Image (cartoon, rainbow, N blue to C red):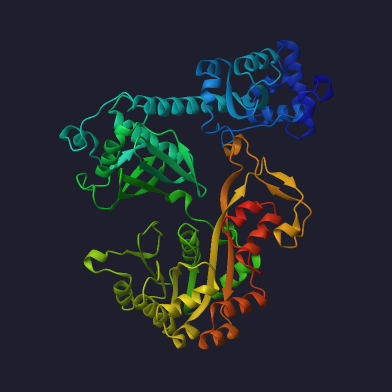
Amino acid sequence: MHKDEYLKIGESLLKEGIISQEQLEKAISVQKQEGGRLGQILLKMGIITEEQLVSTIGRQLGIPYFSLGTGMLKPAMDQNLEELIPVDVARKNLVLPLSRTLNSLTVAMTDPLDLILMDNLKKLTGCQINPVICTNSDIAKAIEEFYGKSSLFREAVEASYDISVPTAGGEAMEARVREEELSLDKLIARAEEAPVIKLVDLIIRQAIDERASDIHLEPFKDRISLRYRIDGKLYEIPPPARHLHLPIISRIKILCKLDIAEKRLPQDGAFTVKLEDRVIDLRVSTIPTIYGEKLVIRILDKTAMFFELPQLGFEPYQLEEIRKCLNMPYGLILLTGPTGCGKTTTLYSILNEIKGPSKNITTIEDPVEYHIEGINQVQVKPDIGLTFAAALRSFLRQDPDIMFVGEIRDLETAEICIRSALTGHLIFSTLHTNDAPSAINRLLDIGVESYLVTPSLILVVAQRLVRKLCPDCKEAYEPDEKKLGIKLNTDLIYRARGCSKCNQIGYRGRTCIAEVMVINDDIRQLITEHAPYEKLKQVTYARGMQTLYMSGMKKVEAGITSVEEVLSVAAVVF
């Protein structure tokens, strides 16, 4: 777009209602006296903000405006972008590489009309430059954040291949790493400290920054593997040297107060990290493998946990049915699905919605992942006899209104839950089943009598998590309905593509798809008759219950997720 094809900046700001005619005339008067660009004069006069100026210029030029606050100025992972544009070039010219696709490099800059700079970047990188515009302050912060973290992590990993450390059980090392909390805010200041401490800090910090839910550190014969789970998928990260595996494991064990000498048995522990104003719990699990201990760290960010029920992804009619059951005075409500399907998030969101001073709510969990204000939460401790069943028996003497049992694992727990539901309590719990109808058969299979299930069970919700398409790069196409096996209410659906905002993945964030089965008289009759799973499934689906696949296809029609993502978690059931 040539300069004569768009309005002058003053006219654009006036047209968009950002400035008034009087303010424009004052700025033009100053420009005539002092010279300079009109936009900069409006900025100095305090009439507009830097964001308003740069976003307006972006709209004039047809160039996207990226801001630091929305997470847009975040370079893609594992593309070695810091090697394409070195840090000194980035700082001198205020440019930041965001992503590379084939021969095209997306670069954030403050002046996309600087043709000399564009040409220099093209020669330097060997790529066609695709510019986006941003403010000076935003890009300066983004440059320091990216090159600082990138170089620190890369240098730490590279240095790990050249360094040696004391044995994991050495007194010197143990003294250096013995802490109850790890303060990540001091990461830069501690860059000169022990290499193992620095490396562990960086691994955890980067995982938190990338929104990872888990860190996997796995030993193999000649190497170790480092992976982050982001939005349910595992991604490889450059790993440290193989000989640092044991010191890294020992460092984390000491933070968790685990036995660093015990390498033959699984161990579980936890510790806390502080990041700015956030307190993040890290749950650690180790298991022995043939090449050493595998370590998994679950990242629990308390500030990112709670959602309102409508934000979780349920369809409006599903939400209405769930809330009707939440208003029941007693009964058993089950959430089903595999590990990591979002059951805990849904249950905590439900409890957060229904809690109040007039209700006595008690939970028994393994583990207590998040603390909810106003709710009594109990941690299972089987080694001292505090099991789900034992805790539930005690709960009934605590005058409860609502109880949440982390999981029904055996007949004893199931019977106490059901009998509690029959005696005037609202009970929430979870089961590991593939869909909603099979929850009934699971209760019957573990030994619960049908005459107890029939009057107590009021609702079963089966759910899965699917990744949401990146709204900035999703690509539309015409679906093949015969191949999908379902009639869609739209001519176009979307698939993942990848851009700088989603780190070239094509997805960002997750939402749930669900089956919501309200127990009615027809289903109660089938339970009494010990009807087989196929019969239960046929009746529930015939009366209009949406399957997981159908729920996913609703999200596909709405452009929220892709067909491939739905098929990865839900079977095609009609």
